[in-house]
Image 1 (cartoon, rainbow, N blue to C red):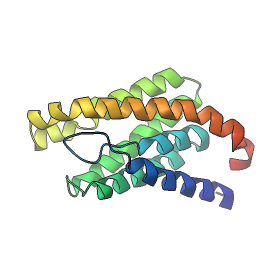
Image 2 (image 1 turned 180 degrees about the horizontal axis):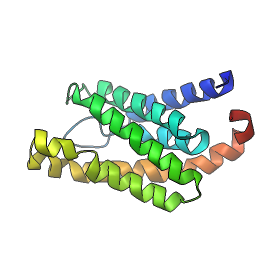
Image 3 (image 1 turned 180 degrees about the vertical axis):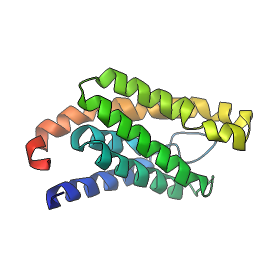
Amino acid sequence: MNIRKISVISLFIALAVVGASIKIPAIVASVALDMVPALTAGAILGGIPGALVAFFGHLISALIGGMPLGPFHFLIAVEMALLVWLFALIYSKGKRVLASILFVIGNTFVSPLPFLFIMGAGFYIGMIPSLLIGAVLNTVLALLLTPRLVSVLFHKEALK
């Protein structure tokens, strides 16, 4: 990994801090636009850099929101990293719509599943609307921004 790629990953993590500050009304204050930079990084740089941005982006979002779920945010950060890695993998194969749909479904219904057993059905069902809105907004914004960032700011060959 070269210095330029590390710098770009750092830039995306910084952008995740900005996105983490833009909250979506929810039961838990960590639902935000922190995944836009992660999804964009995954699409441009690949799965592992995107996963790193997702992991740190969620932790920063949770910190800004007061860590309402305590140490469970580490579990959520790992889930977000895995979802962005999967998104990047499928996106890189040219299946952008499938990657987006799987990310939204995974973020909305699959990632909160452990909380169904930990905190009950009420919490799980109560989180679904805000997670759905957040996942759709994050994905749509990333899909709109990615081609523009690639063509204006980045040369894919220089980042490999």
